[in-house]
Length: 347
Image 1 (cartoon, rainbow, N blue to C red):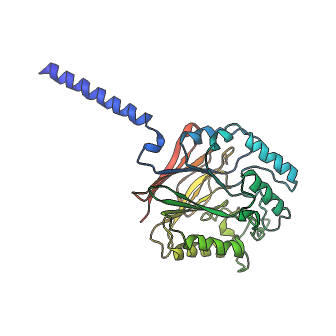
Image 2: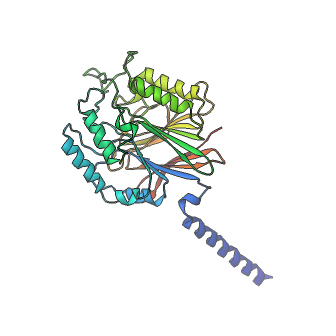
Image 3: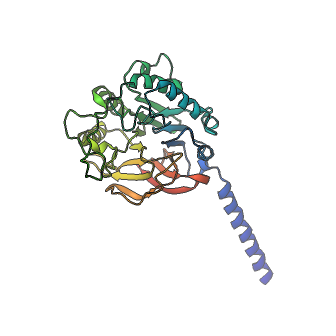
């Protein structure tokens, strides 16, 4: 009887460690029945090494989304900007990642023109052409004729549909309202009803993209944060009327599974709120930055924050499960380490 007990214990131990080893070696995209994976990030200094490209590739994404500040040009010299894009192309690991991988992208201030620039930037048409050229947008695409780089695309799988709506928060954005010199904040809210982030044409386009969407999940990509608004830097909160318009547009559209991605801040965080006539929480997932981070960060207010601020280099990962109507949202960093995650189930 004693020998039988010992033999049984050995079998159980072998089974336990075999199962444990199998779990560790299971490909990331096969865990929890992941149907589609999106990786995204922002704030990439093209002249610095990006150690995260290889980490992103480990997750076998089906789509890469640029969240803005894809290069740091900060210029009105288009020759320099073109060279900066070439440097990005040569950044070790980037071409290996995007080989046979779809890409969607927006821009932010550093790859648009000057720091915090908007509608007033006088070389925006030239900058748009360079942007579209770099991302190999077809010469006959409507984006070549429109003002602004906004776009939308559906990704259809046998399990369901994901729609990505990329906004341009630069080309039409009203000039920012500076705070008083004695203030610790850089900018203050502009409540003028004529002020705007998206401009009339883009707003009409955006609302139509939401209303007509048949997708199971709808992702809104904004280069700047949408919900976090108390820090005094760039944010949709500098235009409170635009924030309310965005929330109302989402609720009115009845689009399914809407959430938002943002960048810009050199930190990563989840923000979440509830809005009237929307039967699920609205999430703004900020992921920034890829090559540098707000390493001296101590604290800043954000009434919508969920969990904590990550002030290390990181990228965002979205894992979709259509049967469960869920999205696992993760912040990952060096060595593919998961900093934090939330799993949102949609009705």
